[in-house]
Length: 132
Image (cartoon, rainbow, N blue to C red; front, side, top):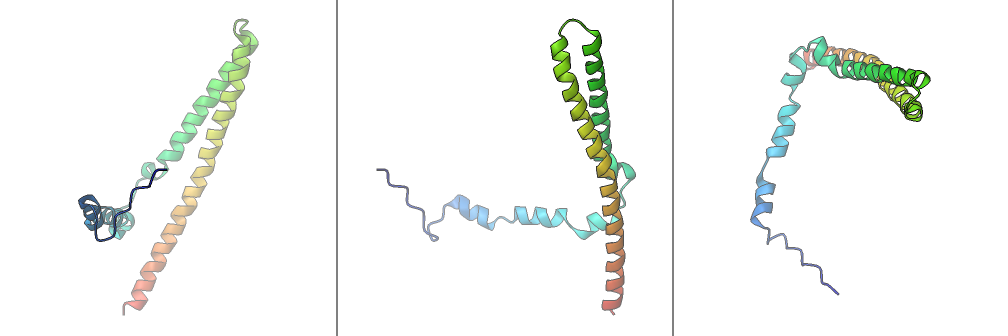
């Protein structure tokens, strides 16, 4: 039987582990990426807010249209009819799924934006009354 290697005691730490323990890189990155001034004061454009759902909707629409073309080819095309009959509905369903996900994502983002505006307003009121 193999004996598992003995784990080092807390006093016998390797130089790498000491370096990792003393390094504050991860915590400083986390703090700087979530700082209040970055997220609250800078106003974002509509494209910055909605670019992901717009991309998902456009890709979904393109895949859905491609599925329509492939499905219609199965009715017209004599050669490789089975391939078109299998792939067409798959592209139709994938495109429709992406399209619906993107369209549902937009109202969710709008609701989050309104909640964020309300919370910023309430924070400013709270700081006004409690900092006196």
